Image 1 (tube, helix red, strand yellow):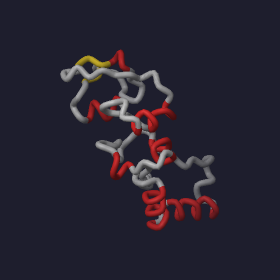
Image 2 (tube, rainbow, N blue to C red):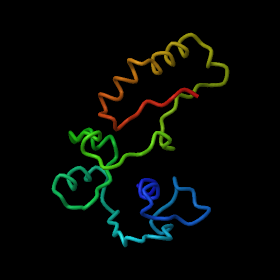
Image 3 (cartoon, rainbow, N blue to C red):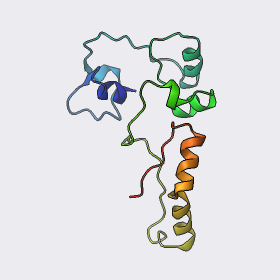
Image 4 (cartoon, rainbow, N blue to C red):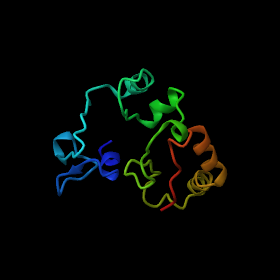
Length: 131
């Protein structure tokens, strides 16, 4: 959430603080005097949004999709593709060339899998590129 606010120029974070571990006490500038209520359980956020209880509501992608929201239509902003919160496929050293692993990676990186991920998760989950 702080990343989205920072990227939009709405807040600034203390120098030297990693944005992935920053919290509200690390905000050094809030020129629009935004007020944050951040003690809610993440799973409640779709309900809060649907009841109009906040001017802006930050909802984790999994909860948004489960609640029937379409991030492609309902969101005013989403994390960039360069988000640090990506899933990875990790294998033991030496196993990366096993046929089963190569087959898995080919399937995960295929255009059809990428299209399925995008459509199934309504743009809330984006397929990552291969590294």
